[in-house]
Length: 266
Image 1 (cartoon, one colour):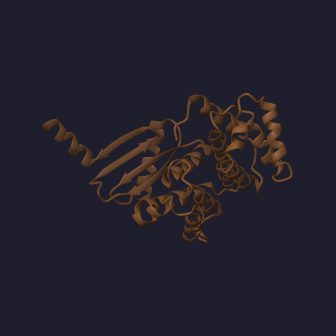
Image 2 (cartoon, one colour):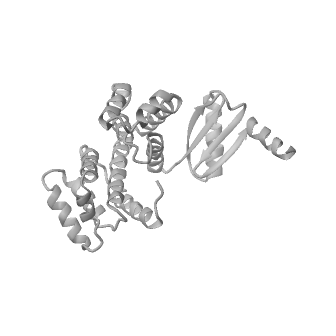
Image 3 (cartoon, one colour):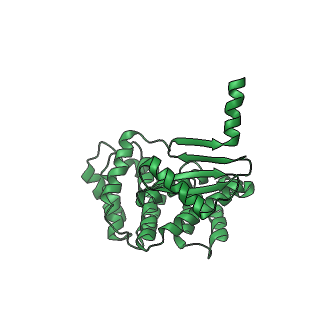
């Protein structure tokens, strides 16, 4: 999802306001419920983002709507969000969804499980990407969202952390255009919480632990900060490695080198 610089700054301001807070157990799920309510009521979204209404009045409106229905922390987060000026009601809902996801990940971080949660999220994403039938089932907007979420629960229930199940269920809605992009967004948020970047690495065959560690070290030096390495096996990669790091793509595959030679000879 492409954001304007102004909207990106407003999201970052909300991130900063919550940077030092621990998320209470129910807060992320309450935020998801608020997002669902906003998504279902366009008039409410417009009212809470109307630039002609003073910020304090928008906050008071949100307080009246939610008082007694959600906890104090959720009420405070929604109040901070509605005081910002958003381009649209969808922008407000997206910002709150982001905080709900960050809340789930922050709870995993505070409990010492974020590394495992990240690995499990990436593992499920890789499974979906490699299975055309599953990929289609999660992307099929003609199927009710509840059915797609039930599929996620059937595949993951009892096998991974609860945070992973809840996040994968949310990703089934494809808020970042589709399931895969939404999951990648979650993984980027997880990396940001640990002050890391994410490198997606494609190789023809599995790498051993020592190779992965050397690659992680090299990419961290190039990047200037720690890097999470997420490895995808693709037998069509003849040899070498392909790395996607942010907007940068580092090609080191035999296929790429052959293509370069072909272009030179053409």
